[in-house]
Length: 319
Image (cartoon, rainbow, N blue to C red):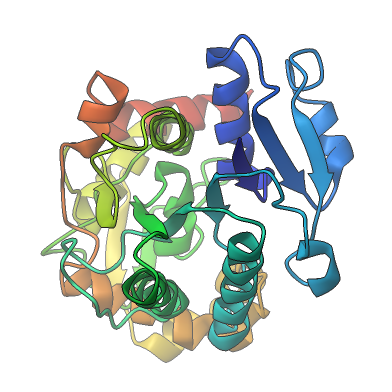
């Protein structure tokens, strides 16, 4: 059986939706979430006989036995700014999965470390991911029968507010004030739902074709077809709402003190703003500019371009 944990949230929900759309029968799928009622409400999940279970990263006892019967697990990363806590949550889930007999884990990391052979990043948001990646490598080295795939999920096109001082399609402004001049290496933006689709396809391949699965014990990076500098990103955002938008470089303290940044960083609020600003140095270093053709190969088509996604998001914000 294949498993998804947590089978909720933006990416997890998208994976479940694509599995439900692609498979005539979900009886070989185990969907695990903190609130299983959200799973039952998704089209096709109950009708196609998916197995639904309950677990919570933060309730350790719920992880024991929840992966029983699963051979291939998609482990979606835990949302937290506390790096040690986040890594330990991943480690506990992986240990529990191994005790239940899971032989292959696909882990959703983040495309914030440059090329696939890179094992470092200055971005605070990447640290727990890198530790989890290293842990999976270590487990495989100790037990070669256990295998893994690290999916460095590209930076969501829908997540531009995090990198533009919470610029909003609904209430656009003409200036984005960030600790970056907007030039240089950019971000290979990619649509979240297409990441969900590609991740679902990878999960099915790993489950159905374990002997020939080409990403075993590898890191792959799912990205858009090009990178966009933050200056180019601002222009695309402006075009989507019909007004010019520019980037103004400010100090980290000035960036962090902006009210919308203070309120926008909900995980720890403004206290984390200066740490989050490490993302801008990582972008400057080229950590998010890596472009691969993995999305095109897996989807069988070119991923949706950033301009199209931005126009659709702007249209939705006006409706």
